[in-house]
Image (cartoon, each protein chain N blue to C red):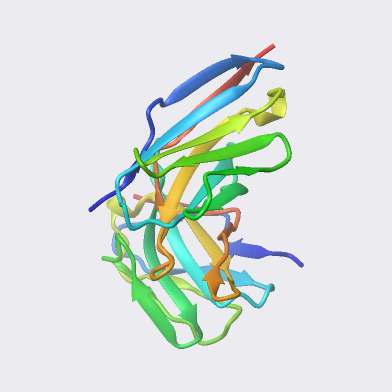
Length: 112
Length: 115
């Protein structure tokens, strides 16, 4: 079946820099996309979401960009902090099923 | 609100034993689901429910049963545990707003080891 994948399994950034985490999806029928943050030993935590009728959505220090033409999703974290260290997952679904398909995840490490 | 709660936090089983993983939510969410997460991987959907009395299979349903007798609870049953079911199990819930499902909120997980 179709699934969501990530370009990079690990990402290291300097504290204070901006981070960009990428995600590719293959199901053209997907219309809802979510970014989750997962810290060690915890469940996934919602960060931000975007529906297919939008290209960009901003939250507090985070921005999600959706490029439907190339089926690409990205998460931008501004002014990265030590607390941002975690594994980040993108997930996709379509409204008819509400079955989330997760990518493998990207581990974000913050260097002091 | 406690959100999504799961019990137990950790469980060790022997091959062939049965057990039930509990999941409860106090947000009156219609949708509930179970995922498993294997090391270094994303979550995979096992079963889900869009309301009391309604359940359906996800991506990896074999070896698991579910039922939804109330809105609040969605237990996951392993009838005969196998080592391949060693994993971390997450329960999640969601709700409808203006005809669209909102994001799923996850519980803290149950770590299961099958020997």
